[in-house]
Image (tube, rainbow, N blue to C red; front, side, top):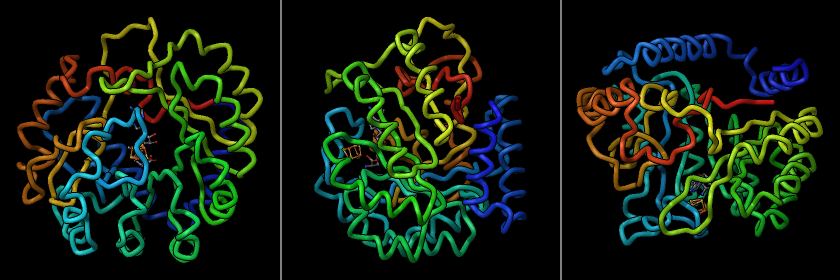
Amino acid sequence: MDLRTKFLYLKLAFRLGMLRRPLFYIGTFLSFVIIRIQALLKTKKILFPPPNTIISVTSRCNKSCSFCHYLPELNGSSSVDLELKIEGLIKILDSDAVSRFGRVCLYGGEPLLNKDFFDMVKELKSRNYFVTTVTNGLLIERYLKELEEFPLDLMTVSYYPEDVEKIKESIKKITKLMPVNISFVLDQNSQNKLEDVLIYARDVGADMVTIESLREVDFCERKSLNEELLMEKKSRLIKEFGKDFILRWSSFNGEKEKSKISCIDFWDSVFVNSKGELSPCCQYPLSSYEGSLNSKAESINSKVMMDLREKFSKDIVPKGCENCHYLYGCDPLYKSN
Ligand SMILES: C[S@@+](CC[C@H](N)C(=O)[O-])C[C@H]1O[C@@H](n2cnc3c(N)ncnc32)[C@H](O)[C@@H]1O
Ligand code: SF4
């Protein structure tokens, strides 16, 4: 990591108020260390709940992106009834499977469609979590007042070319209230948009940009990109934009060795839905949620989770992880410039 990137991370740390909450960040750091040690040792059981909690607050969405891995499962007949409510969130947070430190990400579907979204942010902030969300940004303008009152610690806004101009002014307002990460799914078709994304991120004042590789799905013909074809462009763009924001790249397809799995999601994260069921990862279908938060043996150390950890420790790719670009990434927290 070069000096310029270190400076950008330091600037972000200030924005996140790390100096105002040293004890919380020390606790979070320690739980990350413990999890990393368990991941290195490839333990089947984990001792403590992971420091990353990702909560699926809705399976409704106001878009229908052709490449979305959840697409066939969104907006089902029971989506509204199964939406997470504030009481449900409190139950989840009080359970033994969820860490008292670290990050909670409100995920979806489109999380801002959940009417309890800001009550949840308020509750999470009162418990000192590092609160994040991932949104398509279409409802940001409607909720500007609430976002001002209850800012998140980090908001990821996905860059969808068809929407970005109409939400640009609201994103500019949001970057003044909280750190913003612009996320872009790069594939063979969207390569020519890469520069537009980075110029847009600079215009709106984003703190971070994440370039994600497409995970191919069988109902969409879009194809993922080869790492080798990206190399030259990537180093030019890092030079040009690396001074403006933190630029992170996921792994892309390539010829590099693919034998050692380096993803640590099964140790480091827990994915929960409104029924208190768990999923191994956000890349798994919504129908993969099962078990319950009632005990560690039914949740973070369920047979399903322990079998998955065992497979990873033997470098066997489980069915649900096939084609996932996180599998062999050199750093699950991504390479930055
Ligand atoms: C499932 S969406 C949910 C949050 C919100 N609706 C949004 O679009 O930002 C979370 C992220 O996953 C990304 N995503 C969806 N399908 C994907 C795929 N097949 N490959 C890679 N990323 C994908 C989206 O672009 C988005 O950034
Ligand atoms: S906006 Fe997000 S959840 Fe909705 S269809 Fe697109 S990627 Fe999927």
